[in-house]
Image (cartoon, rainbow, N blue to C red; front, side, top):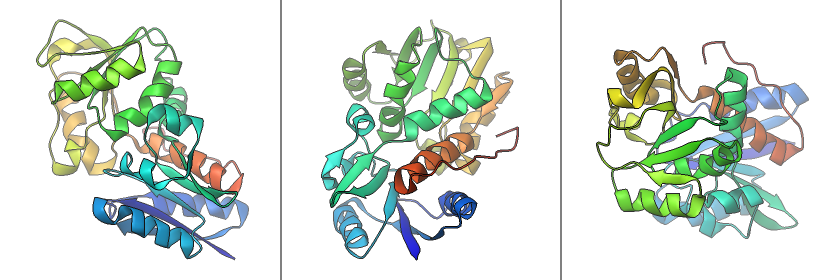
Length: 262
């Protein structure tokens, strides 16, 4: 049989998810059809319901719908409850479940890249669905502290208040330096970058963008111009979160192979 899979988001045409999951499926001899479905917020519920009612086996959710997808599900895994966002959908006992594999995917990629977060000072730029998805898993690694910087300060305050061991970096505060900087905004998809102040950077600071490909370049190029020598796009995270979603759908753990510089 052919398993029907899909990614719901806007935009989706850039996504590497079909190729990644095809590679995973080949490891186990599965036949899959992974669709890219660009959808507006108003259509999200009906398009997801149509997909699963017509035999869909599993789905991923990407920006900007990770929070909205909560309302479509019948049940949530513990990870999705903690993050309050959903990036993976699956059927269990006739019900539509939501999971979040982003946080665990990021932490697994950090482990592979030997990026330390335990007892480290971390700055996260952004406070949307992507950041909500990674925050619980990052906090579980017991960093010294996490600060959240966002254009809308109140949104950052609300996220920090419910997360613990987090606070907000006020706009243009340059009195703090960080060990790890993470861009969780979607500005790169529009060729833009959030602010990146030289004072935030130490000699050993690591800069990571949750996006990958062209969307990661504005932020990473700005970091390199400021002398950062260790910069990473989110391609590894994409593979790791995809592997966890694949495991959820098929109860199989695929092998991940990435170039050394990704």
